[in-house]
Length: 201
Image (cartoon, rainbow, N blue to C red; front, side, top):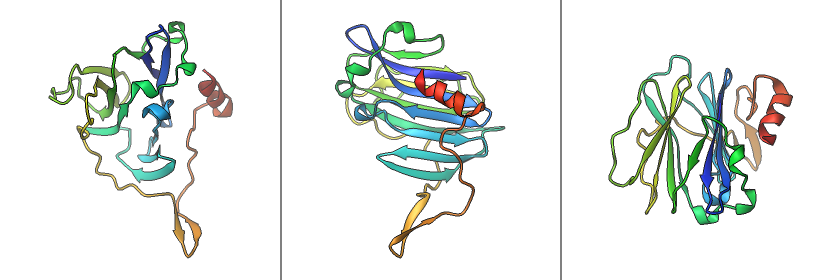
């Protein structure tokens, strides 16, 4: 399963904000427009091991395994500043595929992504005007809420209780790698060829 979230531009083109992939290895969310606020990368492996890339740093945590997932967890909340979007990255609407999400709003937007075992709706929040909900059909399902950001986007709906840590830390002036298995950040079912094709699309 693959999806993209696009932002519509006044000239009729669209810019990719996020790429989302769900494979047998896990869930991958790749932010494509860092200057606009959508640059966070998230890797959620089937085992529950997660990597979060934001602000030039990488953090690791363990969440619930994706198999048999129950409950709700917010995995991403972003404030997208539309005038920071690079129009040179725009493509035509012909690039949009069935199932992709196109956001067409005049101002800044907020985006929250929520993993859920059963939700198909979200209660309204006063600070999230004109909210719309998109449900990505996967296991567990991925809820994507898009809303007008007239100010700070506020807090996540379902905060994650996981403890995040840097995979590397300074010790005695050097670097010490945390014990454990090193997991590739972007790992797809069919190896390098599949990964290269995904990032070139």
